[in-house]
Length: 231
Image (cartoon, rainbow, N blue to C red; front, top):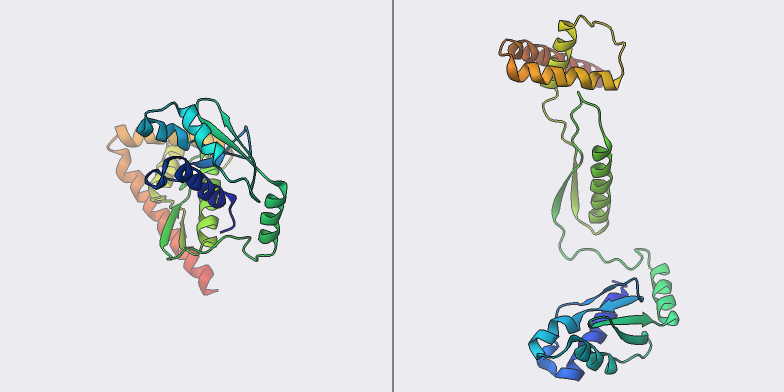
């Protein structure tokens, strides 16, 4: 994968090895993006506890031994012990050139493909949707596209659940209130649904009627779908 983080983490590990020996070089990746430089390394904060030294002293020892070369323009100690890393413009331009010349933009496929199920917003069809449904759907699709690009077998799922019962509750509540024509908007349906939910939970006689209406809705929908498919 074309990623400066890989090169920078190798340089930081080499700097730690040069400063404190090979026994301290087996560290996790410590470089991340930063608002104060191109990247920032926080390895000194963890090593300071092992070495029983000031984090800034540890950071200074590592920074002094970092090889600037073709990758780094500067390595400056900042704050309690961070190392701010600035890359050379030529290095970054070369990385962009490599990405431009690669049909996959430098992103490698996963070594082993896995089956991944991504669950979308799964709204209640009898209620008004809200921004939470939109947000989770967008996030889910971003994850699905990313995983698919990496070569995984992605199963997109938007489960709408038992929609017959909510619609049965909604229709029966509207009938109880004498509303037989579709004159309302989605907000009105939400009001009806909340009232129907209260009646469904608190009135045992309402439950079988709503379930029967919902079952009838499901049966008609299935028959209509089958008829459309046959045509």
